[in-house]
Picture 1 (cartoon, rainbow, N blue to C red):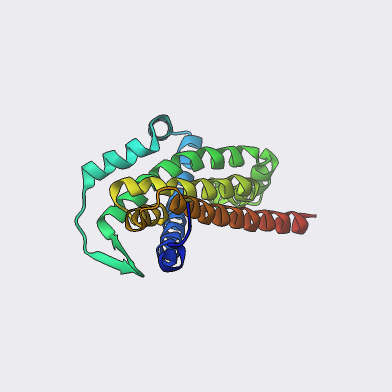
Picture 2: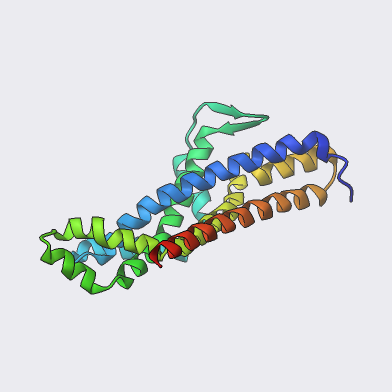
Length: 226
């Protein structure tokens, strides 16, 4: 095992790490939007909305993420132009499918986190908002959700870290992220273990850095409340 390939192959890792971060950002963003809508549907008094949200959550949480990626890839199978980032070629069709599939999966988990955060907000907050003349929708938007998001920030940070690691599953449909870069280097350098160890080091640095960022944000919010 040696790392002689690293100086020439470092761009593969750097570009792959950048693509991985971009993918994770979009997945968490869309997952947060989907999760919030699903959480509100499950909290709704409308039985139809609650049923749809419950079925969505059970299916997405009850089936393997890799299976969902492959199913959506077969169903959609888009053909879009290739967009080049650095030395890696990103097929926009595959990228769209990957982000779409993981966003749906992430939304199912985030919805439960947000629902728990909403339920953790004191009922007195809602009653106080009503007494001030706010309607239920405005109360949820301006009073309940901001407090709920603050309560579940650590869980959302963990979801970001999880998605960052799980994005490696997208290599199965040919998305050129960090793990794909490592596999490319395996082929070019005839090294089997070393490229994977380097990719693991990149993942570790990114996840540790994100964990620290969210910990600092949480600490700052706690100090403001104090």
